[in-house]
Length: 382
Image (tube, rainbow, N blue to C red; front, side, top):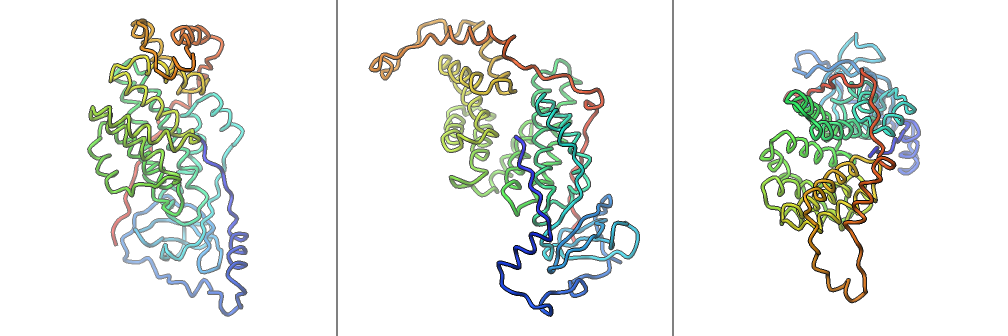
């Protein structure tokens, strides 16, 4: 689900900061020359494609071009040109970073309506990619878009892998997962807002999809367990459930999925996936009637979505195999209240309406299906 697009104007944000911190006399405002800068000569830096950004540091906003970095310092030149004297600035002095992101919202929204996830990612990626190595800069305007790119690539990879008919198609889907992982690792560096935590958890989901559950578990062990109300709560327990299911412990997976469901009923980014996982657990536990009921609710509540498509496929399988043909033992509450529905009939009716209700994703433009490659690069130690 697309994160909200927030435009924080450094000058305005600085005005708010000053207004809340009391009057500042001219001599108290540090000048650019007072910042702890030093020449970049002799320092090993990880070079990056040049990217121009307006940075607020020490209460002063100026335009610089970032050309590389270490873990703690930024290499830059003054102005919009990458040529000139290179200097270093300590990352901790940065208060705001504003990248010039050119995004066609109209075309992006068209892709999202068509569920053309790769097309949507490719519309965002050219604008976001130069900023990826710098997403840890506080209050930057690119981190939320990077999270969106990673999410769209994950959705594309999941669908492509599910529908893959050849080894080449499976490999292409896994390559997309790798690109999603790289983007999300960068986005996970944005630890100054909740989206960074979400990006990290999504990158662990990519590792699981890439057949690396052990690595995903190791990362999750070092992740601080969120408390109820935290933005990452639902995704944390969804990933915990997915890892349990991968290991074959479907009762544990069900418990974690239910925990995600109960406390994140309004998070559309996790709630439908947790429902689908709980239905899968019911299948593995051979509780076919409950699996059918959950899949039916997903298809009903989230029409014209990838979640609905997945639920419909499983419903079609359950019905074709006659797994719910036998009468289900009626729960005691249904007897007491006189409640009983012909769920098999409702499912059959829903599947019959597929031609009318299902909104199949439109074929994207040919160029939208070119490979999307992103590599994650660690900064060098100083």
